[in-house]
Length: 338
Image 1 (tube, rainbow, N blue to C red):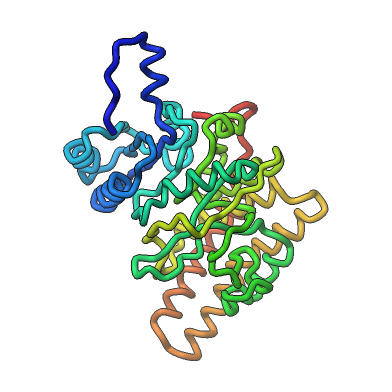
Image 2 (image 1 turned 45 degrees about the horizontal axis):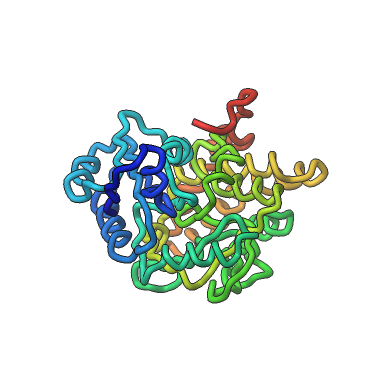
């Protein structure tokens, strides 16, 4: 994006050059995907914008590659890995746009998606948080663009494997909006951080991401706090991107431990007191039930994938002391910010 050069005061010049949206990308050892993402942003976006890439101390030459190919990008090559939540909090302190867009580095912007998302935000300002439609690399639906808040029923369905067996059912897979192809505009509980648009002033009002969440759960917490302040997050099918991750992801114990820790923390912080004990019990039973189910499938079929799944869930169960209570409570006034 070219900066307009005019002879005025510094404050006036900054106002003229201010972008409509600041696009925030947190990069970590994904230089090829990050470059593809940046190319798609440049190709498909016409609204006044700036791109801020915070590189979380990558060891694959990401920062150098980005600087060489995209000199106009505001690059923040950090010497420490802040993670996703703090990385965004740090980067957004340097944003100038009225809106900020969180965009994953493993995404590709399609058909003017950011322009369309900005128009959607202007048409539906009451939402306060906006998202689009995500696709896998083969252009099939990637349903991870949004989620419904956890409930006692969704946790029960999860424990008994119903949400896995009936993924396309809105009744048995309520958290994943299982019966919705994301083909119409709707209000949702949670917009995923791979494509999340929010006004910068509202982001600061919320205090950014809660740093209690070391990994996973940040955007869920942000959206649930936003709803308490009157936000009604919405998804539009018109703003489409490719989001590669998750297409055929294997069960990895390390990731599952982090996911369970985050989800347990969300239950602890967002469930009413009378629901909390049952919710935590169901969450703690989930990996045990998945381990047992995978063991039975492995015994019955003798298939390697079921054996490996049983081993991963078994490791998660053995590490339950790490996730069963969620993340530690933050110190006073230390939950948000940078």
